[in-house]
Amino acid sequence: MERIPILKIGDVLLASIQVDLQDRDVLALQEDLAEKITATGAHGVILDISAVDIVDSFIGRMFATIASTSRLFDAHTVVVGMRPAVAITLVELGLTLGEVRTALDLEKGLAILAELGERAPR
Image (tube, rainbow, N blue to C red; front, top):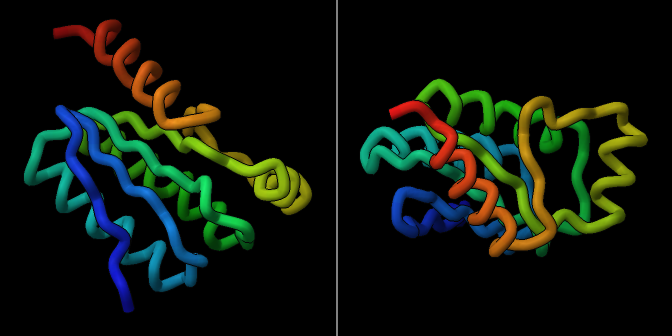
């Protein structure tokens, strides 16, 4: 199993998913992100899913679970690059991403996290 790389950009972690996701990949990503947030003190997580063609109900729920886990470690999550077919599939499955924010691309995702960081009490 190949792990999804997680890059640190300032106080943001970027996980760019470039492979078709299997259940075990998403579970490993959740664990890896929790460890990286704890180790780095990151305040933001971006999940770039621009290369993801297909999602099922488990993977859709795991995106929301990853965001919830990140919030427990004081990090906001933004999902970027969602393709229209993926969005339609999530709606057809009746899934919501909870409090997960979305953005069209990485630049807009970083802007959302920067804005959230400015609003956070210090």
